[in-house]
Structure formats: C-alpha cells, structure tokens
Length: 57
Image 1 (cartoon, helix red, strand yellow):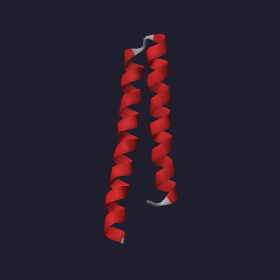
Image 2: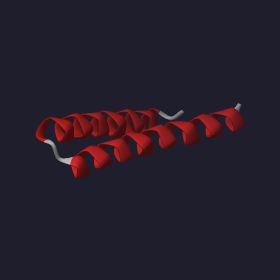
Image 3: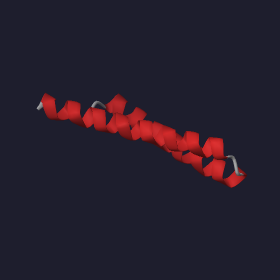
Image 4: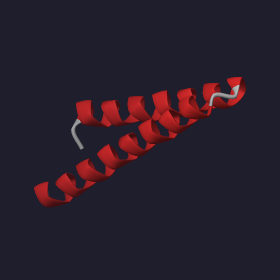
C-alpha cells in the first residue's frame, strides 16, 4: 500500500470516528450517519489498496 493512500485511509477513518462520536454527543443522527459513512470509505480504501498490493508482488 502506498504511503499516501494509507495515510488518506487512516485520516478518513479517524475523521469518521470523530464525526460519529460528536454526532452522538450532540444527538445529531445525520452527523452520526455521515461519520459511519466516512469510516466505511476509509475501510474501502484500505481494501482497494490491499488488493492492489497483492497483484504488485
């Protein structure tokens, strides 16, 4: 996995976790859902890069 893509994936997951937590704290269901979606995007980016790594070797 390239370093920049790995960093983007980690950042997206962290951003999503923070947004989800904040949404729960203030009772904003939309923000909570957006946070979960951001985390899913980060996990998908990880999976995509893992597949690319398998074929690089």
